[in-house]
Amino acid sequence: MKNKILLVMVIITGILAMTSCGKKSKSELETKETVEETKKETQKEETTEETVKETIKETKKETEKEMTKRAYTSGDEISILETVSGFSNAANAMEGKDQVSSYGPGKYFVYKTYENGAINISKSPDVAGIWINPNKVNISLIAKASNKKTSNKKPSATKPDNGKSTDNKNIKTAGSTETTGWSWSHPSAYGRKVLKENNGYYNFGNKVYLTFDNGYEYQNITSDILDSLKAKNVKGVFFVTGSYIKDNPNLVKRMVREGHIVGNHTNKHLTPRKVSSERVIQDIKEWEDIYKSIIGELPTTKLYRPAEGVFSERTVAGAKKMGYKTILWGLAYKDWDTDNQPSTSESLSFLQKNTKSGDVVLLHSVSRTNSLILADYIDWLRDNNFEIGNF
Image (cartoon, rainbow, N blue to C red; front, side, top):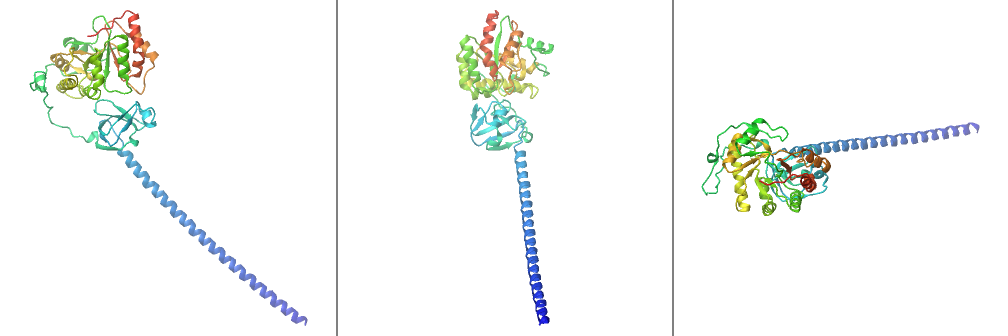
């Protein structure tokens, strides 16, 4: 009996051992299957991650291509396909802050670019316009500046006052084509000599003359300047470009109506450093045609200011032949940079310290500072016995 019991116990122990082994084998199998599944999931995730990386890479390439396409340079010809918001400086353009104007759809030129990506566009390649954010505008590039073909076509003939056709040949003038720039503080002896011999001036008599250069318009600054002149009963000279006349006919008409002289600043703001002296003379003539088309007749007093203050003996002699006085300036300051305007106090102080009797004063109409200090400057001139003259 005892042996039987022992046998039964051995058998039961064996059965239990076999059951335990079966459970263990099953557990190991399940663990193995779980590891395989995890491995597969990991491989899937790695594949997905690689796909995402490739997508990002492709997107980056496309973005870089787009940025390259939008890497505009001065002189590029573009087409704006929708109305675009315009700003007074590059920073505001990229931030979309303080819009000052807008341009409608049409063809424009890139006048200037800025490191933050903003571009200044204008209807003329030689005149500044408004700052825009090119990334927020539907722009089509017509031609890169570097790819434009130079035309060999001669300038077309224009009609002078007598109705006869005039071309460069008829207004070509003898004289040196050597160019000179103008500095009110250190005018060259050569420049002074050329002006003196060709009806040119930078100071005049014993009065002070207020002159304004207008290349483009924003923020109604010229209107504010005209308001101040009218309030103080002062007449000035506004040297404007041909494109300015076409873009701002009402402002030019107001200048004439209120007794100011509108001076010839050339049609396209060309200088003899960029083109021939003959082409500059033609540019003066083209301005006349545009002015007459808006006003109906040429100014009674014909004044010419060379673009950028650059001239040659031949260009001022040509202007003289056309009946112009060439007017440079005896006093100026850095007021033209709309992105870096000087303070009103330092500007007014500078003008007060440097104004002399006989000075032709150059002020730029794009300067908000000038519009703010003009009335005070006029009052100071009168308080200090300066007479404000007109040509």
